[in-house]
Length: 307
Length: 103
Image (cartoon, one colour):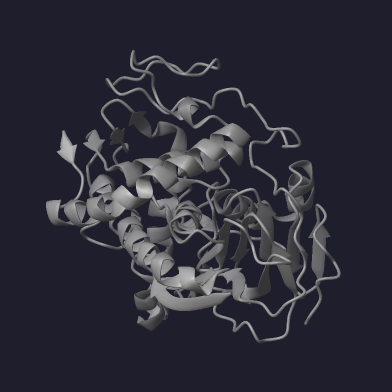
């Protein structure tokens, strides 16, 4: 097994291959794929397709295949969570103060930022025309694909890299994990933490997965100061405000990284209802309360304690 | 009609997309097979919703996003549409190679 790490999509990326010989080919595909997703789906690039779509003023807009796929996946997530994971949260995020890359959010004078809170919930109004590959976003609605597009990138790149490198591949984008191909014996060992920038060697729980995806959502990262107090990026689309939740972190395993990410984001926003929601869907999960106490759901291994 | 994105961005992206497109489709297909049909989100060639649930007519020529088509879960899949893993995570027996955390 061999791995590399790099910066991408405003966060970090990790690539590992079960066969060290497959790493160079997988790395080329990772770099290629990340650039493609960034150009298609970034809310912060002036030259991205998503930015153009958000600025189209309600005009039907032809989009590329990758943005199309990312939109379909995002709308599927909204449907499956009854709008708890909502791609039309872009305007709410901007008004709440997340109006530039997080690196720039961190360095500005936060106390001068006056947030406003506006519910989202417009995902059913997004119009798709598959034949023309056109999308219409109603005026005033802004898309943010941050959650599901990153996970889709991880799934897609892991699948492509596993085929190209002819071995098992793990891709981690900002803490969202996708694996494909034949895993190493015992599965891919993954540390679970509040913050994806935590080093692998730091003591903490660790699990192994052999297929699908694993995603963690947390309210302790991507926070910013404002004139009315600290905000975080996991907004509740129903209020447009940072989710008020008993969980500081939710980690979910699913059949794909997209589904894991959808469920972990929903779990944080759902709050007290999350354990039952996850159990109903047979999704193994580890939820961490704000005081650090962990709740295990759906067959998550409670024995995966600090190594 | 508006064409999204400056042309250089599209050209640069397209070169990368060629390699990824079929895998993206594969991911979508897997998701559709596991749960909600992706085809349910898009209009048919005739502009008719590909869903049994139906959606009111839209004022524009582009149909709105319809409700999802009936799901066809795989054996063992939950009816929610979010695909559970083939097996629950196991305690790791080797040193971690990556971190899953918030970002």
